[in-house]
Amino acid sequence: MLIQYGQELGDYLYDVFVAKFDFWLAFGLIAQLLFTARFLVQWISSERAGKSVVPMAFWFFSMGGGLMTLIYGIAKREPVIILGQAMATIIYVRNIMLIIKSHARGSESVPN
Image (cartoon, rainbow, N blue to C red; front, side):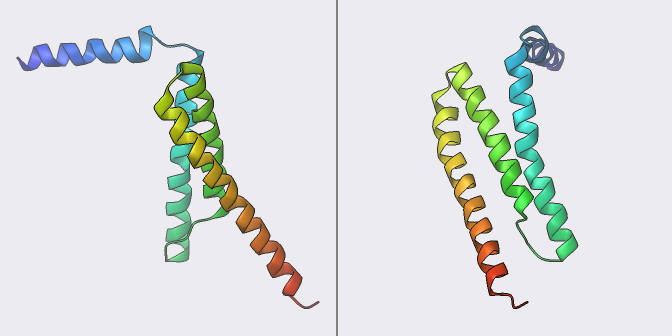
């Protein structure tokens, strides 16, 4: 029984990752890696600061991975991915805009 499940799992993984490998699968995997990298950036930044922080790079990785995943969803005609990533990408862009605006305000108030 276990051997049969192992063989079926192997067949499934081969079908998904090898037999059906194409440009869009590679694109989607790269998008997911970019999106996942944001957590590594946030974790490393927090460890260095000794507290939980969200660096600007987190939002850039979120936006890049989110946009790529959105493109992947559109190409694959996946409505769940399209809706989720379209909304999330708006939030990522808005956070970047707020951070840039905050930094600009902060530099204006610093005396020379």
